[in-house]
Length: 321
Ligand SMILES: Nc1ccn([C@@H]2O[C@H](COP(=O)(O)O)[C@@H](O)[C@H]2O)c(=O)n1
Ligand SMILES: O=P(O)(O)OC[C@H](O)CO
View 1 (cartoon, rainbow, N blue to C red):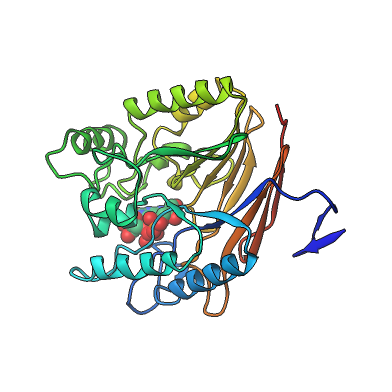
View 2 (tube, rainbow, N blue to C red; view 1 turned 45 degrees about the vertical axis):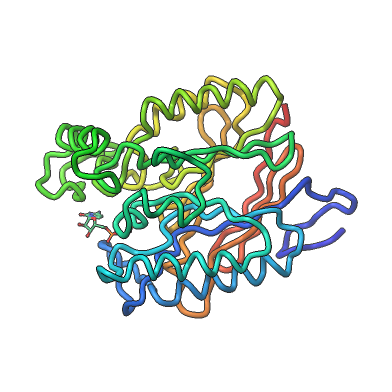
């Protein structure tokens, strides 16, 4: 038996592959601050968390890739410094010996428009789409969703998707400040400007990917900046149409785990269809000297998140069919 961070790895049961995870770095060269709810945020320290993550990922030697769940720079980054800040964080990811798959978050889009951001993060997409899939081994497929597909941020003001997002906010949130959930009840509190939705075309793409994954008997891990299950996150952090996304996912048996960021405290749930939802703890909210990142060991019938610092270890077992 070998023990890693208190987890016991049965001898001879090597993972099929492993990958690194980090979320919500939200770096900015500005003094420490707080979230709207008063939670401390360490904007300069967060890049040090990323640096330590990359060092540990490289020392591990067997990580095939890393996934960044979004929000690499913070919206408070001074105007005019956004590009430099994004480049600085990208440079740290580039020190990782394997590729990083990125997701975009609301804070990325406060800083740069999509057309500038996506090439900097090497998105394998065209036409401003930030959703894609990849398959590190035939048995597994990763689906990266773009929850800011329908969003009031990131698209040019006159873009039809921005207009659609504003119509949704107008209908669902009566507050003059569309980032305020005041008066909204329960999961309706998700209709905030800092969230967004997965568009119709992307839902159809997801459906097609899951049909293909089912045909090829692949297990699927879905990655999304915004959480997709109310059991794993605060209502204010949920994707506007998480229910429509889950309706597609629940049609099939292939999705085993959904991983997200955005809700900085982290979370975990198993939904009504047995799908596991793990929301990752944010790098931004680590007091100096502390960390929040990890790596995931993937097996035929489970995945094991081994966290460093505030990122909680999570053992996720599922039906391997
Ligand atoms: N419960 C909340 C949370 C947020 N807001 C508004 O959103 C803005 C961003 O929130 P952060 O937590 O990232 O600071 C914040 O400035 C508020 O305008 C809110 O109204 N109620
Ligand atoms: O990442 P932020 O600053 O937009 O915060 C999002 C909230 O944590 C969602 O509840």
